[in-house]
Length: 95
Image (tube, rainbow, N blue to C red; front, top):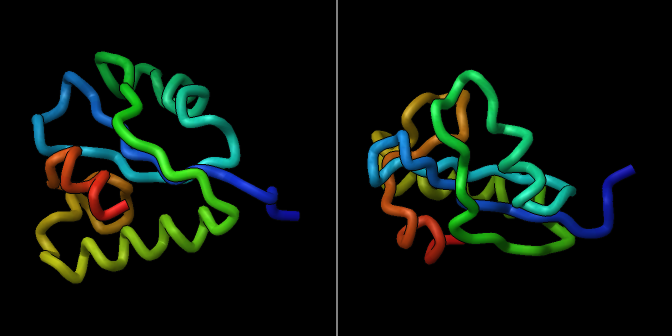
């Protein structure tokens, strides 16, 4: 059963390039999700840059990923990952 509301988030990480962001979704608060992602795979913790609270968070995330890919196929760093080569403010505007 899908939660009633959730979040689409834009995360940044000081150890990444300035124009790299992670755009994902979670039924939990984005700050909790960012802490879950803080593991040995990244040298520094993620920071929440922007969030969108919506009942359609699954659809909103899917549309973001799809539409950013249409803008420029080179924006998605890896096809099967949620990382994009886009300025955080531009990602937040699209969100």
